[in-house]
Length: 188
Length: 172
Image (cartoon, rainbow over all chains, first blue to last red; front, side, top):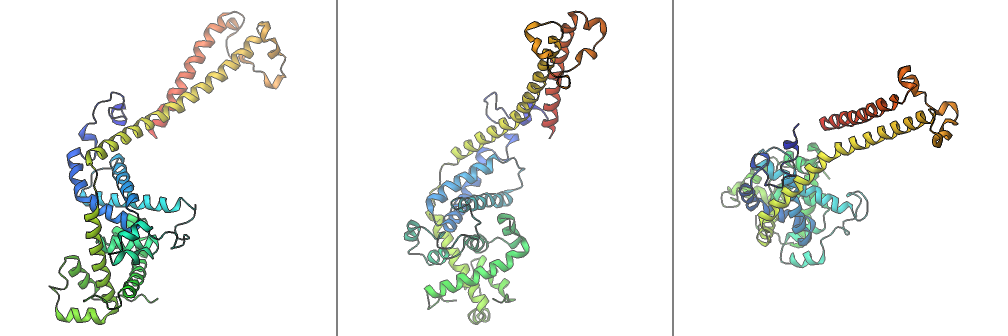
């Protein structure tokens, strides 16, 4: 292993060579334009905190760029980005109480007042705020992003075999909450 | 809770994913979705999530990608510097330990050869003292030339040890 490959221009202070990077700045700008809104939407809706979503979206891209991984195409890159964001959320939820995410009461993790105000017009916001964080993640990835069970397993780190059942239960729960909010129901 | 998804869910989900619900939906499938709880839930949930996604995506305030790109490169470089520095630090610590050991051994050895200010070291109990003089030829041990050979040998040993540790950790 040569010094040049380990330390790309770090000591000389020059610009990094394009061949060593997963993508150059123009390619990244395009990728960012295509993926940033959906990533932000995921973070904002799942966390219930738009300010946190701003921070985590930026951090996700910085980690994505800093990671030494081969360029596997945009779809895989996007999935990797969502995985970083999911891990950031999980770390954030674990931090305050040093407890497992599954043990944290739902009320504690419910959307903040700021986001509740923002969601006041939306149908989904209040229902989503009553779910566990993991259920929010699963539902968003499946029904907003359209990820398959295998892709959701890759993003969340859960076992692929359990995604189907977890998703089914989460869907039942949110459908019930949506019906309670809107008893007349939408036109199918 | 029973886990009994409907076998028409896939059909419903595909239409919803393509944004063709309910326009491209047959009346029979639509009637089924009204009657089937599983498909009804699926339609309600997907429509709500698609609407929420569109709403949230339009509310996103995106920063400049250029700034993020440079932050990413900076972090990448810092990680590379740290990665390179780790084995060097290990080698330095190892070399320092070897030098300290060599210096201690030298001090004990010289105390036995007449340095009075170090004479107290010679008074140490036998198991703690080292018999380094047994390692080199008799002709050298009796003269001051022993010191001239010992110091470069120990210094070389320390340097080589550090180099070996560095190369070993760099491969890992």
